[in-house]
Every structure is written in structure tokens, then in C-alpha cells.
Length: 118
Image (tube, rainbow, N blue to C red):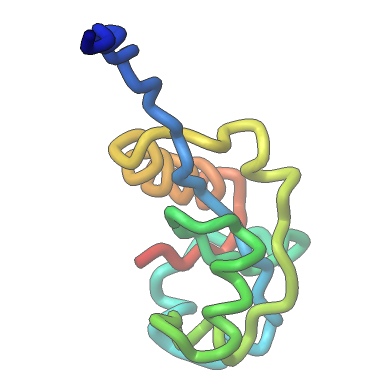
């Protein structure tokens, strides 16, 4: 006698995308393109890079520093993650992370941070 299969439970979507903020060394301001993108920066606030990833922010930062799918500013000037600026939002679905990356970059720039977001 065959056993009846239980109906499959609907899979819960596991949100695993994250936004992250990396502090950049102030020497990044030697690049005219970076300076031009941040004409109203507050000199008391750090330069930052904002991104989103399907990895953990720590793993993504390590990949930037290793030159794997890296942003040149992060590879050359990345100092550390700034979780106080992004941890409240993680994790989230992909579309939300993509939108949050842009919104967070705009909000930080409005607060005076010199921001790069690609």
C-alpha cells in the first residue's frame, strides 16, 4: 500500500540581501570625480561607499578589498564597515535592497557625507 504524500508547505522566502556602508580614507578626495560628486560635503563627516549585496556585508567588503567585483574606491581606500548606518535595515528582499541602496546614499549625502554609490 502506497503512502500518501503530505501536501508541500509553502516555502517561506528567506530574505538575504543587505545594504552596507564602507568608510573610505579621506585621500579618496584627491580624485576630482569623487569631489565633483560631493560638492556640499561636511568636512567633519567621513567619505563613504554605499552598496547592496546578497552576501553578508563583511564578506562583500572582503571581496572588494581582494579586487573581486570591486569598486576601485573601496579597493584602494576602504577602511571599515559602518554598521551603525545600515544594520537596522538588513536583511531584506533583493528589490528592497536595491531601492534602499539608492535611498540610503541620498540620505547620507543630504546629511553631509561624501558618498559614492555605484
